[in-house]
Length: 262
Image (cartoon, rainbow, N blue to C red):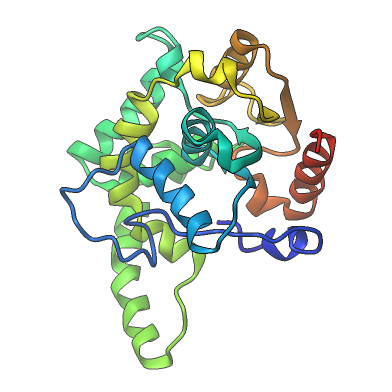
C-alpha cells in the first residue's frame, strides 16, 4: 500500500513498512491465533525490536491508524510521535449512526455473500465518485466474479515468470482476512483507551482527508480529536491518498512530523 511513498520519505527518514500478520507475505498462518488490536500493536513493536530501533515515528491509516493508537496508549516509550489517519472508530458513535451501519453492512456482505463482494463495497466506500459497478449489488457480484477468476490465472503466470504479485493482487488476497476477521475486531468493536491517550507525553495527531467528509472514518477522527484536545490535521485527497497522491501525501506527513517537538 505504501510502495510509492517509501522512496519519497526515505530521502529524509529511515522507513519501515511491513505486512501485518496474515496479510500478503506474512508467514502468520494460524487461523485461531489472536489477530486483535493489542496483538497487532505488539507486532509493530516487534518490528522495531527486530531492527534495534528504540523509538520511531508511526503513521497508520484506516485500521492501521487504530493500531497506531493502541501502540500510543500502551507502548509510548517506543514512540517519537504518531499520526493516525482516518481511524474508523465507529464505536465512538451511536449504534444507529450512518457510519456504523455502513461498516456493519460491509461486514455482513463478507459474512453472508463473499469477501470479494464486500471488498468491492469497501472500495466504493473509499471512492469519491464510485462507478455503478462498485455501488450496486449486481456490479459488486460481477467485480467479485472477475477477481475470483483472475486470481488463479495471475498465480499461474507468476509461477512461470517468477514475478512478484502486484499490490492489488495482494489486497484481493487479503480480503477474507480483512473483512471477515479484522473488520469486526478492529473496525466495529474496538474502543480506544481514552484515559491512556489523554496522558501520553509524546506528540501525536489525528488526521483526515480533504475529500473524506461524510465517510465512516471522518467524523470519528474529529470526534476523538475534540474529546482528547488533540489537533486533527488535514491531508489532501481521501482515504487512500498515499496511493493516489504519493507526493502530496509525503509532503504533508513530513510537514506534520517537522512540527513535532524534538
